[in-house]
Image (tube, rainbow, N blue to C red; front, side):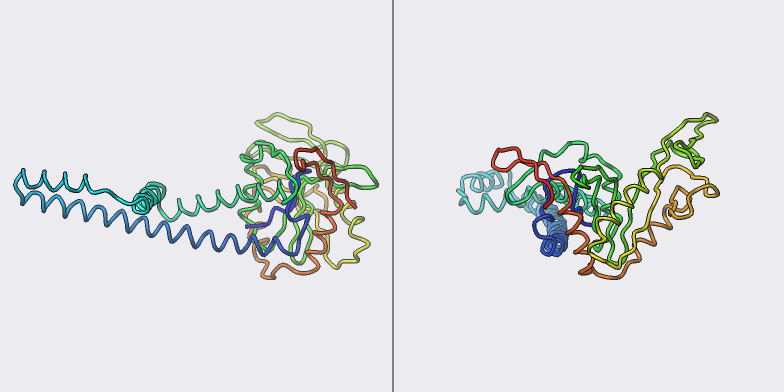
Length: 314
């Protein structure tokens, strides 16, 4: 699961210590999964034990007279339990109820959901600042998909606002791998529609035998790529910047697409994703340097101790 190091203009923990938080989040993931799996297994065992106990009690009570069984039940009800015993029983009941009947696949979905919520929290708060998170991000399927599908040696800047020559500019998606930087523009289209690229300001989307004009996505993609390269030039980093035009639901006419841009559509989307996952290198120092530079150039709107603040890059 990739690291969400910057979301829009929100305060991010990664801004304050890019060296620390990637490893801390990876450790959090491992520990949380281990704990959830243990609780899930324990809940399954408790559930089975309770079933066996109920069956055993039923059989024993059937052997007793009606009067003796009633007295035994009254005795159990009158025994006072300590607060610790009550808490333990409540915890057991809560655990069993939460994980009862869930399969391993359902447990994984709960795990990913918890991590996604944690990532949104980390990407909108720091120890001293917080930003008001737009509720749309809780339901942003593209963001969920990127964070879940990319491995944890990737870092994601999702529509960050970067200050270029003292002017805030909204970028699209920037992915940092240990060996490459990807500037990604998403071309939203109807399912199975076809985009016909052109060299001018507009492209054509063919939907159900109808035509629709859309802004040429390469204009903003080329601008974003140029800005990222200019920002990183003083670092003299060796990581290449690759342009990606992403349209997971639609088709793009490759023959007229830009040769300097990797075009990913419905046909080769899974192949592209598999290739991105085959990145064996751990997070590298140069990757952290690039992330730190981009975060320092990012614009942040946050509140610190109930006072609204706007933080420009250093």
